[in-house]
Length: 190
Image (cartoon, rainbow, N blue to C red):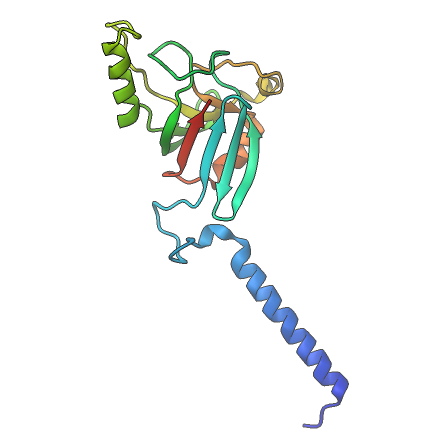
């Protein structure tokens, strides 16, 4: 077959485009790759979440660094650590998402493993020091969830309305829920 120099250039150009397209498609959806093993394991998450109560922000990170930021609100204006059940405070510490579910009032929800061992240790220590009443309970059911659909204004106005959970706008919770898997680590800090 007799090819001209221009047809070689065109063939080379088209081949390069195909290679670039294949590489882009292969690596554009990061959820198919594990950073170390290059395979997705059912319990692995290469996302992690940092919730900064002082900035009213939930930040998502992946293996490349910062991925997304969402404004959030909590249960109380007092952003110190949760002391006991009913204080409406959001706990500080390191947690994991143990369940993804749909709540009848505010929709998509990511349940945290509160209280975990560290939370129980702090609670018992505070009780022993008299910082928490002897009859107090530690509480449970802390989650990341959305507002009700018509109440997204609560996040815009920094209106803390939950019983200690972390709340995003209803529409933004749908986005977060769509890609954060069960098992994702969550750090809540003041």
